[in-house]
Image (cartoon, one colour):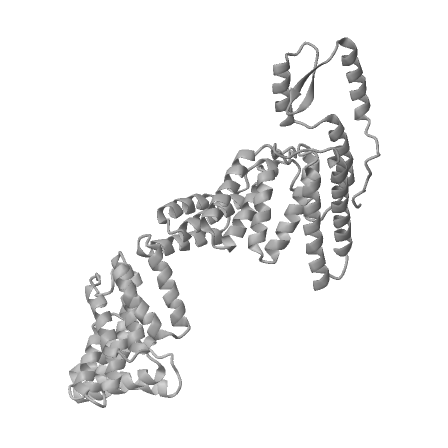
Length: 510
């Protein structure tokens, strides 16, 4: 069903009743006319002229003449049609008219022509939607929407109080806004949506769409305001739907989660951490899935990385992106500058760790890197076993252990004393692969059987951290040291395990 076009000569039955009522009034009394803005105003019998002028002025803000209303009805009938994606969104539009708009004698005819032009635009648009969807057709559809918008805007001036007429204009706005958003033309989409929310103040989804447009443009304050309005309007209009479907009468948690989450997100992007955390707490109340709850938890942890210092965590993320792009020098320089701007010791320690790893692994500044990380390990609170009291620090201990172990390996052929020192330092820290450092200490301790036995035992206590070759080395060292110590029976036990590994049986027991 397409728009019907009608002409001004068609008759609406309402004016007939108007003529009858006027005839009765004329027959009751003589009429009095007073001047109003250069034109004569008819004062009804029994009405003071001052009151008549005031009433006439107020009436201009409430309704149009019955003659104009009748002609507007014709346009309303002409404008009815199905338009895609809009049937349920804009039913009741109630913007106040612009009192500065004048109405001339030929306005009605011009409005009919404009409305009919908009109808033809939509009729052609409906035909195009059944086509191939080629780029040429898509561009033509956009042009038709813009033309329909201009034509309906001209037509609605005739009677700005008619809700149904304005609903068709709103539908064009909505369709146009959707297309602009799909095309990522957020500036134009926002302009259209701004007009829509002035027309329809009771549709929360419109404010959300406008919030999305501003969000895409990084205009956080405006995005935040519109997501907040979306939530407020949804709450205020809950239960006011004439469709008595139970679901429609209730607040929808999924929608509330979306509105509150993006309020929080924009507040955080404005570096308002306390406000954002409070809003995230509200959003958590509406989370309906484990993923949503996890997302909020992760976001809260992100904000609290340095006690709400959002600028710092944003900078950290940018530096990590540089690191991912292998700009190690730039990332290291950034981390070094970031440290003085941090508020909390955990954030400082993490940044020092990241910087130390870059220096040691990529920037040929091994001495500086290991010194920096050694300070972190040294000042970390530890439990009775020497492990970090805060489990998040374990990765720093692991990195430090790797650094010490690798420097020990590099020094074995150059200076065994230096190598021994590094391995001793490595085993003094409870890091993930400490067994490997114990094995290296055993190799360097061959001249002292008791030391070999002790370090091999500690290596084999964590044998799952050794590969099969390393395990065989540990068993061989152990057998040799036990033989030299006169402990032959025990040596045979370890020799059997060495043989089992040599034969490919990893399921050995000690």
